[in-house]
Amino acid sequence: METGEGHLQRRLKLHHVVFIGLAYMSPFAVFDTFGIVSASTGGHVPASYVIVTIAILFTAFSYGKMVRIYPVAGSAYTYARRTINSGIGFLVGWAALLDYLFLPMINALLAKIYLSAEFGFVPGWVWIVGLIVIISVLNIIGVKITAKANVLMVLFQLVVALVFVFLTIRAIRADSAVEFALAPFYAIDMQTSSLFAGASVLALAFLGFDASTTLSEETIEPEKNMPRAIFLIALLGAAFFTSVTFFMQVLFPDVESLHALTDDIEAASPHIAMYIGGFAFQAFFLSGAFISVLASGLASQTSASRLVYAMGRDGILPRRFFGYISPRFGTPVLNILVIGVIALTALSLDLNSATSLINFGAFTAFAFVNLSVIATYVRREGFSIVAGAFGWLVVPLMGFLINAYLWLSLDQLAMAVGLSWTAGGFIYLLYVTRAFSRPVPELSFEEAE
Image (cartoon, rainbow, N blue to C red):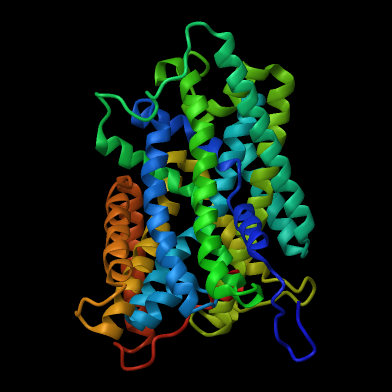
């Protein structure tokens, strides 16, 4: 993609950026959390998706404004650092590290959930340890999944998801006791607090929707196309997730109907696949699930290990350990092993707690993207109300408030771990800056991208 002068060429059109952005949001994410959110919301997963979609669309609007000003890697961390304060930016990036460090753990846990549904006689820890070993070995020896292979895997997952929807609709039509209704979106007895708690888990499906911001230098007319792409990625992803869960919720309207299939609510989706399509479709469904967790596990461990390596290379973390590259493999072997060990926490966590840990960093980042827009406006205009103030003040403020409420809706373990992690980051920041007498170090998020 580079010219002889070392500049990136602007080759990507709007639809290219949208497709790449959608590829970051694994289609299979819609199945990962259906069971636990259906149980926690009383059968209103689509309603929780509407709530998280509103938060994401407000944030996408803010991303669109910021990417015009700072078309670089780093995303929320970069925006907060440049518009609010370098120390605040560091802490936003530090909180976002939780996403990178714990995402391989999520994939290991999902591997156990999906494969145990088919091979219940195998202890669950075997799948967790097995996936971690596989992705660690592949990352150590430097095997990379090419862009074309990634596209094929995403398309395969999409095909599985669409067949799933078709079979679900067929099952609904074949069952005279089931009818299409708006109950998954609204019921008199549904509780707002449970809907927000469910939405705080479902944000996992949107992780990576902002990754397209790193393509600004390669996009034709980025000032126009990047904001459009970000908004379209969020909107199309939300439409897909909401539609799929609507049909699933119509067929299985409450937790009792899911318990009729399985006692393991976390593994509801593969059992639903069995119900609507028999053993053959369940095997097809599980092959898509395995491809999803393997591809995502490889990519997430690669990103995390490279980010930690960049921090070691730059002296933010101990250089001798975290900045080490294996002479034989040319990869940050020690960092890969550290990320693998962290992923073993999947052995003692359930899916709800695991996704909440991931989403602590996500909601922190989303909230500060919205605050960055407000800070940019205040720096330019002060507190005067001028033309365009609605888009620069009211919209991002609404986005911030919704994301903050979702952040507060995370479970207690996520809040305890996330706040402790952030406090540790603040103490570490005091140490490396000698109580802010030295410049705040920069986190190299472009390595992870």
